[in-house]
Amino acid sequence: AHSLASLSGGKVVDLPYRAEYGPVPNPLGQAYERSVAEGLGMLDHLAQAGPFILLGYSLGARIAGDFAAGGHRNMVAAGLVADPMDYGTDKAFGVGGRRKIGKSNVFHVAHPRDIICRCPANSPIRTVADATAHLSFATPDEWARDLIDRLARDRWQRVAIDWRNPIAAWRLYSQAIDGVVDYLPRPAGRGFHERYGTDGAGDGRTYL
Image (cartoon, rainbow, N blue to C red; front, side, top):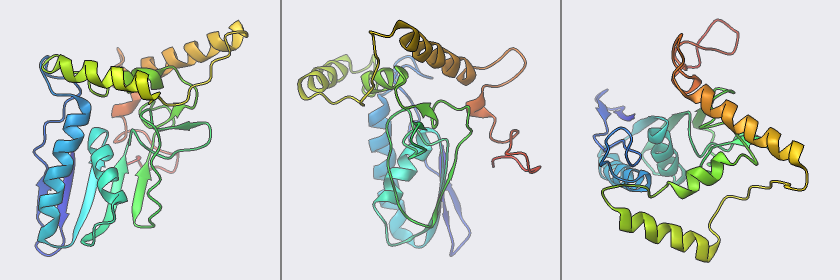
């Protein structure tokens, strides 16, 4: 998930939060947003000990990025890999939205074919991400309340689909399917979300 490395003693701490997204990987796991809140609470406690470097991957990058955006006085630097809230580009950014940290000591790594951090702006996958943020079979009432609140307050990422243009709509959904296929494990290996240690930008180094 992510580590908090202390500069004074060189100690590396793996944050023991429950890295769960509802039923994944635990059928009765907690909701994604609960995992985020749990991780942030642990970080807030650990960060008081002294200067540190924060590293996060995927859900861990969401937590680390949210924490870095708060500008903790002890944070020397942060590295975010596959952040689902990556600010990205005009055409593609994090599947959960975008969060601009705006600090020179925060470094972002995003595989161009990883839908988690490079999801097209109008992808219907964004609506799926919004609708499942509080998904958990352990607390279905919490999920239902969140869905009702989203409908009542219109708390959805803006996704523009021109249904009057069926070809354009078909392309959007085909693109979304391609993104999910790229995410999933392949017969010959891992999906692009798990290939940061093997793929690279062409200079001989991997993304990591």
